[in-house]
Image 1 (tube, rainbow, N blue to C red):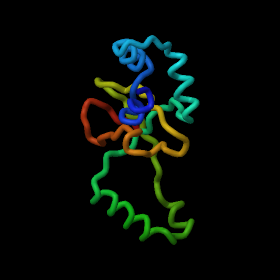
Image 2 (image 1 turned 135 degrees about the vertical axis):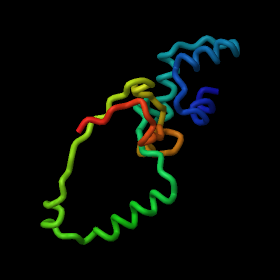
Image 3 (image 1 turned 180 degrees about the vertical axis):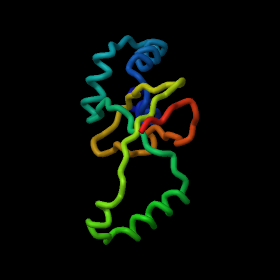
Amino acid sequence: MIMRTVRNQPRTKREDLVKDLKAAGTTVTKKKIGNTLRCEELKSCNTRKVPLLKKVHVQVRLKFANEHLNDSEEKWVKVLWSDETKIELFGINSTRCVWRRRNAAYDPKDIIPTVKHGGGNIMLG
């Protein structure tokens, strides 16, 4: 039951698994659940945040990358790079954990899509 739940919902917390098993009539500790998942080579990691891109956006980015693949270093030195910081005014800005296997960081189940112009934040540059 533990593996099936985590496979279907990787963001499931150990506390939720304890409650589900208790409701099914089995008493298990959070530590035992964590050990079981680690034995199955699953690790609790922070979810990756990636931009929510449509297929059109991916195609445009790929086209740009291919067009500028062989640009000289002198051309890129002239590009102005800026650092920006995003501050959330309201909403959840915390990290979330997910149970995943090694090299599965960008599996669609294991990421949190972000929206660039979602409102409720300030960009400082």
